[in-house]
Length: 167
Image (cartoon, rainbow, N blue to C red; front, side, top):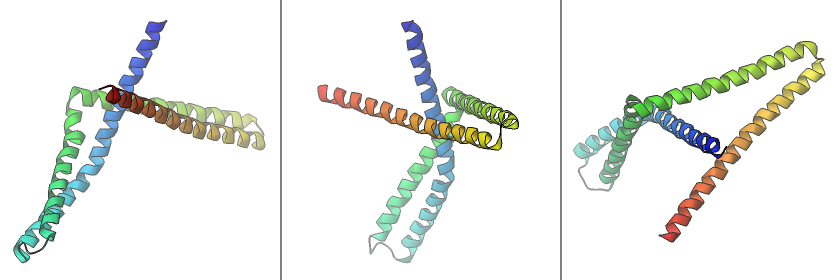
């Protein structure tokens, strides 16, 4: 029985890691064009400052630093958003994410269909009560899931802290 628990925990970790990688891919794909435009704008500003005033004040340095930061962020977001999905890990992560999202959507659709069918035989007040209860359950479940995530994060941070204290 303990073996099944360990396998389930390992599967949960793998799915969680895949979901995190997929989230990083989606976030990077969103941020890449922003950083790309910022890189172009700061490059143009850098060229403008170079030819217009020279190096008399600190603005050239600040714009230069901003350009380098934007360029590095553009490279990182491109690598994560468009490079990682070309790897096996990236492809599997996106597939796992898609499967989890489809499963959640199917679950939500089944609940909505059950409510709809139930409301056909219930009074309007009972139907409203059922819809409110399900809505409250979904909200409560979201809060519980978030609290569980915070609890796990706190546990990981505590373990890291304990390891760093023993070193």
